[in-house]
Length: 109
Image (tube, rainbow, N blue to C red; front, side):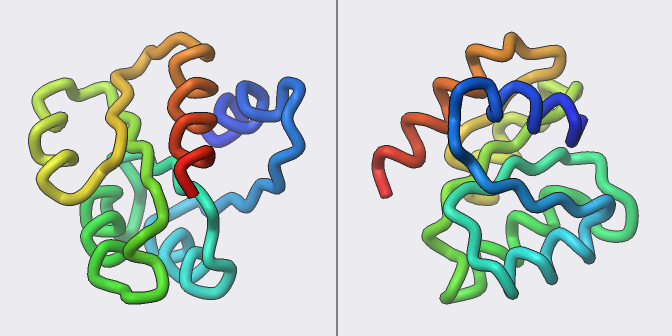
């Protein structure tokens, strides 16, 4: 999924990517790098994506970062929204959906 996100968003854009293979690394990386946008899968080893999202929203340095949550489980849309997701994409999603969400969220920063 990380590779797919990179390929989709690199297409014609000048984004710098940081990747984490699990939830704990994701949160540590976000805290150290203060990203402009987080694309977060719900299914992450160590600490689930919704747990990471909740931690991001509680962190004063990260709380304003836009977060796109992706998952194959459509029943988690309401939970992701309640946890503070700015966008929710159901896998499999069209590449253009991710591009549009990223562009819109980054334009608002």
